[in-house]
Length: 217
Image (cartoon, rainbow, N blue to C red):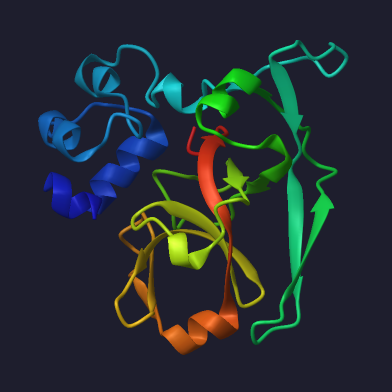
């Protein structure tokens, strides 16, 4: 929880993020609590550079839609997702988003992370449960190859089907087979889903490996 890590009340943190200002007496407390990939420490100290570390979006390249792809570039499309069925027999239908242009990624970056482009999809984030890591309207790059619940990495962010909804959460496996779904926003409490309900209602779509967007600005 950010408030617990920093000692700064959550309303104060939310105001700073939303108004894009570092004017606060709690700078050093925030620096200790915020990882640099979420909020730039240089920005917090003296408002140098951008509030969000540019490294978080550096893998997405800006490209005019009429420009040809370079040898080290690949487009990854954004999808809307629908779920049908249930009780372990859910069908996942992907539909290309007509509202969003494909994003251009560096192949060299994907190769360094051993990501197969054929297994990558982008989805829009909905809601505020993952703020300040992900804001409503941000896009996430999801690796469908990392969808085996037996190989789930504790504390990593995943896109999942929960019932008939697409959710993005930090996941933690429990010894009894249950899953803890954790939000970044401390206003949203942890959800523990029993092993039986995990089988019935949860499908791991893939691990979130990158993010992009202007949410919160």
